[in-house]
Length: 291
Image (cartoon, rainbow, N blue to C red; front, side, top):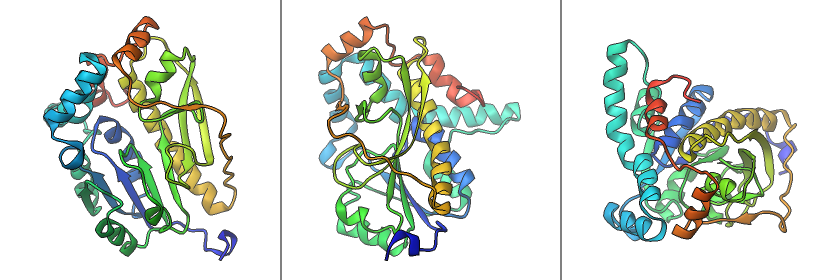
C-alpha cells in the first residue's frame, strides 16, 4: 500500500530518548503538543551492560577527552537529577512551575507508559514496540543505532531530531564540531531514519541560526534540541497533510564526527569554544525562557 492510500492521521507515536538535561528541555514540547498521541516512551539505560558502569564511562570520557568534557557529560546525565529535585523545591516556593523534569516523572504526570532498555533492537523490545502499533517513531537524543526490524514497524516511518545542521555535522556532539570547523551557523534538522547509518536519512525540515560566540555547547544543545522538537510538530502536520518533502542528503557532503579527543578540544578552545558554563546549566531549571 502506498503512503497516499494510508489514512494520514498519526494517532500513535513511540518516543525513543535518553533521560538527560537536553532531552528534558525538548521532550515536554512533544508531550504538550502531541497530547494523547504518545503511546509510550522508551528510555535508554545509559549505564551498565556493554557500555559499562558510571565510573567506567567516566574514566573513558576523561582518558579520551579530558576534564572539561567529563564535567560537560556529568552535568547532562548525573547532576541533572539532584538539580531537578532542588529546582522543583525552589520553584514551588517561588510559585512557579518546574519545566525540566526527569522523563519518568514527566511521563507519569501525563499518564504516558514508559519503559527502559539497554538494547532497543532486542527481540523483546522490538516486540513490545510492535504491540503498541505506532504510526510513527520519534528519536530524540537517543544513544543507540536503530536497526531495520524497528525501522520497519511504524507505517509513517522513523524520524530523528538532530541538534545540528545536516549534512555538515553528523554525529553525537555536532555543536562541538561546529565550533572546531569555524562555522558561524548552527541549527536543527529533522530527518527520516531509513537505514542503519547515523544522521544520513532524507531531511524533512532544517532551520539554521547564527551562532553567538558566547554560547556554550551545553546551552546550544538544549536550545537546538528544543527547536528540533518544535520543528517536529510542524513535520507531523506536513506528513498528515501530504505536504512533507524529504530531501535526500548528498552522500559526498558533510562528515560524521564522533566524540572529541583531547587534541580536538584543544582546537575547540583555541576557537574560543566553551563546553559549559555553570550559569547556563542553572538557568535551564529556573529561567522559564532560558534561551
